[in-house]
Length: 68
Image 1: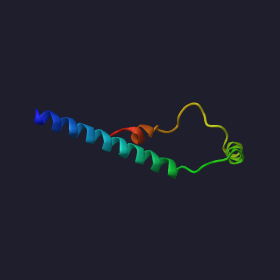
Image 2: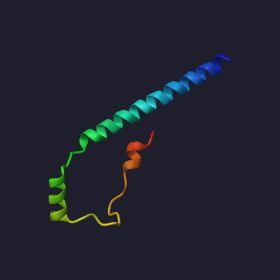
Image 3: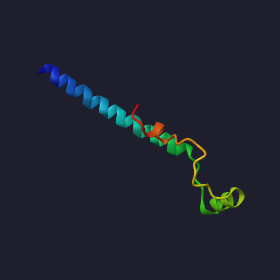
Image 4: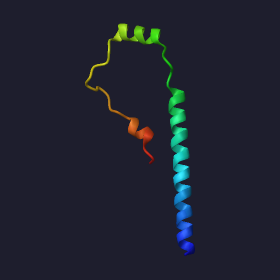
């Protein structure tokens, strides 16, 4: 029975640490993104056009949000 309690404790701690790391990773990600106001966004669109519907990049958000 003691092993079950230890295993449960291990899983709870593992989950809590994983959630804390995920939250801190998200905070870091958000802190690295510059904010753009409406005027800046209009200027960017006028210079570069609207993004096309087909993605010319690889979506990397799964790396940020994954728990591994």
